[in-house]
Image 1 (spheres, rainbow, N blue to C red):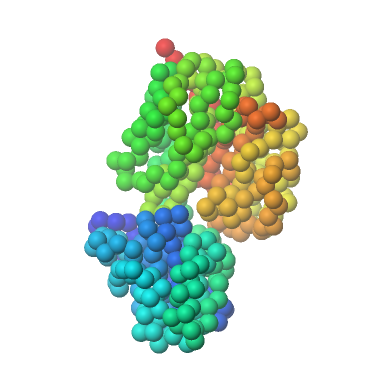
Image 2 (tube, helix red, strand yellow):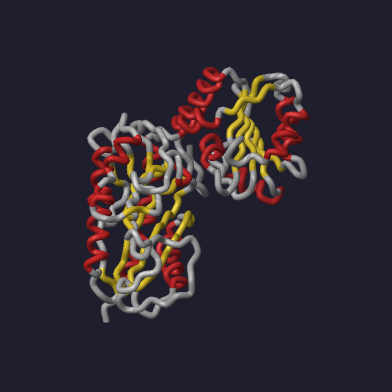
Length: 386
């Protein structure tokens, strides 16, 4: 399926997805899917429409008949009609539940069983209550989890989009390595990251950054908001970066030394992080469990460190979110399947929570060990030598 302005998957790929959605409806005993999404939850609607939600949106996808997409702002409809593969695009105006209820009635589904996606994640409770009031004979069933489990097994076309995202994200690390130097602020680092990907058509997912002196560190994990701090010789810059490609995001984590070689402590943190990454990557195969992954992280504690962030996560920073035995992350039972995309991101930190770094990449679960999507090397580059 071609579109000269926006990327789209092939007709065969969308056919595969529609079949999967209808098989899910058969298994769950529902006649339609009502899907909610917003800027923080784009995957489910995008999967069946190619639409990227920047504001709250609803998709009604019936087992029989044509789907309808409802968006927040009327002025976004022209662009959405070009971007989306769904032909019926409408504004829901002041009442999203009213628009969705009206669509269900037009489809003859006012008294049917309806699968709901996004109930716990993004749908406002008051709007869902209003929807139920407007179609009181309908029966609603939360099918978010089985739908997500279907999406999380990625096709080869989807993996190509993840690889494109990884390429764009790699570009940011390459340019940071070239341009980091004493005297720049963290705001300057943000500008460098944007310079690397904007003219390639990517979209910023996240760029979390922290800088601190390696000799007297006070930041041990990338921060979600940048500060005006100026880099000085002997600093370390730790990063967590995702540049998305049309809804698909591959995340990378690399440290950068500023004007001086990494200190022995930071070299050890890096080596432990890299070994942990490899230990987890080798274990991460179809059928691997959370317990096996956590066991593979044990080098962090054996080396005298702990973690602040998860070591493995899936979509949205969760699904699953696995730490180590010493971290505060609750145990989440999980069995990994082939072609799932997750992030391995060891973040060893000292017990006093002063020094730390993060090292990681997005990977695909494969037989024989996970496949790394990125090509930027696992290194600790020395930047900004005078």
